[in-house]
Length: 354
Ligand SMILES: Cc1cc2nc3c(=O)[nH]c(=O)nc-3n(C[C@H](O)[C@H](O)[C@H](O)COP(=O)(O)OP(=O)(O)OC[C@H]3O[C@@H](n4cnc5c(N)ncnc54)[C@H](O)[C@@H]3O)c2cc1C
Image (cartoon, rainbow, N blue to C red; front, side):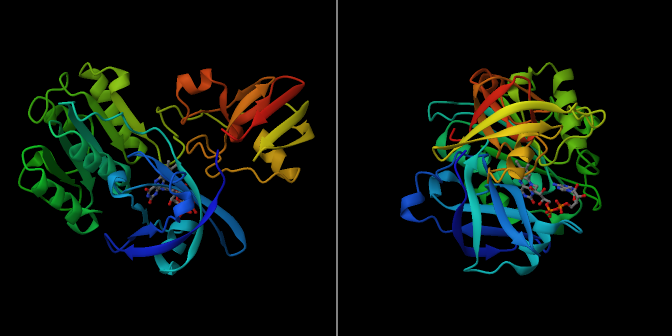
């Protein structure tokens, strides 16, 4: 995992009253490191009231424009999102970890694919980047978006989505689903749930002929999308999910907090080509113990979701509690989330330069 870099904020704009879109300047020497794929996210780090605060935000801009923008929705009592919405100014500097994540499918101008997305609230951020990039890269492909919000005033990127609809008329269809404002058709009143998806399937898209589905939003909606698409016969590999928080429900959340026995091991970590070794005599994650020993490793959510703390096992073995970020082929290549890792062997060597 690459390290944090200090980036300057060059643009700020408010898609809604309670969200802010933040654009960063990318210095020439960091262009390659900050090149991104649609659907990826950044981890931002800032000292807020004396506390090192790190949060992940999906990139909402289109990689073709070489512009790096995230949108942050203000959460009641939320530390980072409140600071960003209330205090962030143009010219401010934030520590930013380069783009990562795999909430995307590879694009090809030869494709004539059909894509469907279900988003809700701030879950639109990676989805709008995926939609725009797909429509610009694949001239024969089509996209349908079902976007859930409370009311019209809370729709993030409403104008930008309308502009995409006008620009890609016939290839991009947009349906707003509102829970606190009545629309003509009942199909679009309320929340996106299993029943709604049953109503959309067959009417707006043929579930079997869609090539890929994307969903991002509250866990409840993502769960409904996943289970209903499966009921409709869609295979797992066509359903792409992006979580913003560690799940608590059936998406794979822990039933209860896992208690680890105290263990003993020798841990070696490699970061920026330098290695350090320290004894592990604890029941805490390797990431936490490394911090206790003075290592400044990259991390953010500590919930197995954002993958900022990813590393590669070079010796020994670890056991992970939860993993919502790494794909089977990455696990196969030895990648692990250090925030979820506990030593299983006497010696463990983890390389963070992955
Ligand atoms: C891969 C990834 C991409 C993300 N992309 C975006 C994005 O593009 N835009 C965006 O606004 N956020 C995004 N998030 C969520 C973001 O990282 C923060 O969790 C969120 O901004 C809250 O941080 P905070 O410091 O304001 O709140 P905290 O001080 O961390 O928490 C405040 C309270 O809100 C709850 N909470 C935390 N996150 C959420 C949430 N998303 N919805 C509802 N309740 C929550 C917490 O459990 C807590 O009770 C993303 C998260 C991940 C892992």
